[in-house]
Length: 68
Image (cartoon, rainbow, N blue to C red; front, side):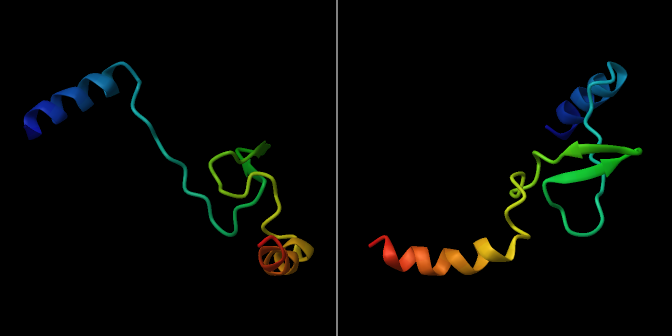
Protein backbone atom coordinates (compact mmCIF):
# COMPACT_ATOMS: atom_id res chain seq x y z
CA UNK A 1 0.00 0.00 0.00
CA UNK A 2 2.81 2.41 0.85
CA UNK A 3 4.34 1.78 -2.56
CA UNK A 4 1.05 2.83 -4.16
CA UNK A 5 1.10 6.18 -2.36
CA UNK A 6 4.79 6.65 -3.10
CA UNK A 7 4.14 6.06 -6.79
CA UNK A 8 1.21 8.48 -6.81
CA UNK A 9 3.25 11.17 -5.05
CA UNK A 10 6.10 10.65 -7.49
CA UNK A 11 3.68 11.12 -10.41
CA UNK A 12 2.22 14.29 -8.82
CA UNK A 13 5.70 15.75 -8.30
CA UNK A 14 6.68 14.92 -11.87
CA UNK A 15 3.61 16.83 -13.12
CA UNK A 16 4.26 19.71 -10.66
CA UNK A 17 0.93 19.00 -8.99
CA UNK A 18 2.18 18.45 -5.45
CA UNK A 19 1.24 20.97 -2.80
CA UNK A 20 3.79 23.06 -0.92
CA UNK A 21 2.50 24.77 2.20
CA UNK A 22 4.07 28.04 3.28
CA UNK A 23 4.79 28.50 6.94
CA UNK A 24 3.45 31.75 8.36
CA UNK A 25 4.90 33.22 11.54
CA UNK A 26 2.93 35.21 14.08
CA UNK A 27 -0.75 35.91 14.37
CA UNK A 28 -2.75 35.29 11.23
CA UNK A 29 -5.48 37.71 10.42
CA UNK A 30 -7.44 38.83 7.41
CA UNK A 31 -4.36 39.80 5.40
CA UNK A 32 -0.93 38.23 5.11
CA UNK A 33 2.18 39.16 3.18
CA UNK A 34 3.89 36.60 0.97
CA UNK A 35 6.81 37.49 -1.30
CA UNK A 36 6.09 41.20 -0.87
CA UNK A 37 2.42 40.89 -1.83
CA UNK A 38 -0.46 41.57 0.59
CA UNK A 39 -3.08 38.85 0.19
CA UNK A 40 -6.40 37.97 1.79
CA UNK A 41 -5.91 34.96 4.03
CA UNK A 42 -8.79 32.60 3.25
CA UNK A 43 -6.96 29.73 4.96
CA UNK A 44 -7.43 31.37 8.35
CA UNK A 45 -10.57 31.09 10.43
CA UNK A 46 -10.35 34.87 10.72
CA UNK A 47 -10.52 35.92 7.07
CA UNK A 48 -13.00 38.69 7.97
CA UNK A 49 -10.46 40.18 10.38
CA UNK A 50 -12.84 40.17 13.35
CA UNK A 51 -10.65 38.09 15.67
CA UNK A 52 -8.39 40.99 16.59
CA UNK A 53 -11.15 43.56 17.14
CA UNK A 54 -11.66 44.02 20.87
CA UNK A 55 -15.27 45.24 20.60
CA UNK A 56 -16.49 42.01 19.03
CA UNK A 57 -14.61 39.89 21.55
CA UNK A 58 -16.40 41.61 24.42
CA UNK A 59 -19.78 41.66 22.70
CA UNK A 60 -19.96 37.95 21.92
CA UNK A 61 -20.52 36.62 25.49
CA UNK A 62 -23.23 39.25 26.07
CA UNK A 63 -24.96 38.37 22.80
CA UNK A 64 -24.83 34.66 23.56
CA UNK A 65 -26.87 35.09 26.74
CA UNK A 66 -29.39 37.50 25.23
CA UNK A 67 -30.30 35.24 22.29
CA UNK A 68 -31.98 32.55 24.39
